[in-house]
Length: 211
Image (cartoon, rainbow, N blue to C red):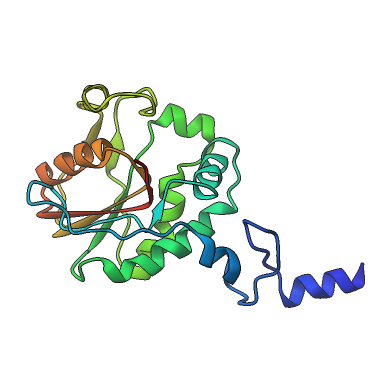
């Protein structure tokens, strides 16, 4: 027992994927699992995109998909700092004039039921890394069904008028943070609202891209 307590004190973190001790004391993913993560390239957004940058460093496949589901639906909050590490590394790919972060908001009922907003949990270290605030006046005013399983048209209809901003935004370039990008409908709808409230530019950063 004393040996285990000493071991925990010296190297307290275990890899969230394999359970092995992480050799770097502040890392939540070991070097082996980090090398095996399904990393993907994020091409520049097309001219029609509302985003200055659209970064998703991982593919939504095993073990990333299982870990994100466990975070969201099974309250496995230890995955949040691990994914935040990945996002903080990906910040090097973002424009350097971002001055605010907006996690994709949950409706208050869903947040109350879940107990947290996974986008907010992964956005906090990102905002700290960038040295910018998280905006607290962006909300989801309408409870919407889950987007999974819906067509692109249904996703757009589902999210119409779902987001709102209290007051105006004085920031120049907002970074939207989410867990998964599929069709991009959620972040595009949120970007429209953020720009209408006063932001000039919007970029998006997500853990993974699906499809």
